[in-house]
Length: 176
Length: 197
View 1 (tube, rainbow over the protein chains, first blue to last red):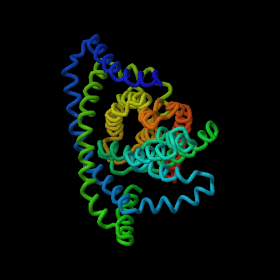
View 2: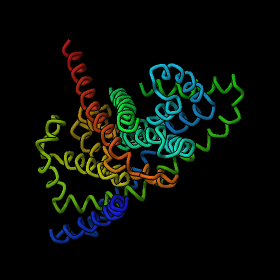
View 3: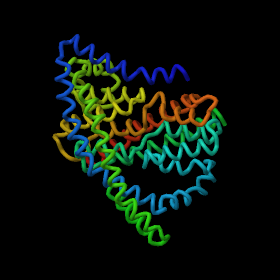
């Protein structure tokens, strides 16, 4: 663990230092280049706002009404037949939709079942091996004003599905 | 499809709330979640400004170009639409590298820059291009080598070996990324077939 946490603390500052030293070496006017590039960040952040407001309000309404829980619980018995532990189903379903929701659910699963239990390890693996597809799509497409997403969502969600299945398979092989 | 999912979440949520008496909760979150979305977007400003600033130095120093030529043979096949020396490649690669090392904060600004360049390649149209879908598929399947957040949570709850999920995470991520690439290829082929008919 020591090595991993050391690496994760050192990597950012080292990267920044490297870029700055390399830039200086290559005679880039570093500070001016930084300010010039950074200016863009402001307008990008502002242009994301409507996309994120629209998506986040819809997700939260869906969750707060209890509709998400209802949908998850109606999926649970079906997936239990296939052999998926029913405790993990909510996490699998919420992971592509809401990053904060998934993180909260992972912590909750780890707290109830223990980090080194089968469910705890499965939740950890799932959390680490997929990403919040809907959020990524909203932010990336929103920032550059893409309105027609085409197959992007389908591809993303199908990949999530494979990720979740392989998390279950590998955790069962390694720890089961 | 996004339009449908979006409307479905609202309408199904409201109908469900009407039946189950949770309308008050819905009312409450209606405005707090909008506010939260703005807070998230504005919170991104600091990250975006800092990393885009640093990226600009890296670009002017020729680092992005170096990165591109290093991985050229590999990425060229993934993104056949993008000319190998196009700046989009540099941003795509730095986004991937940042993701690999779990630098989520740095990855987003680079991903947005990559998107911007790909849009330019697509004649600035507002619909999605093939390379954009590939890029997003790889991104959503998550490339992280070291899932730092998860390890931190596991430590918090007193795990005996917080890092023992790194191996399984890596295997699952590899599978989902490979699947993402294959699924993306499949959908691309399907689009091409449709256009031919």
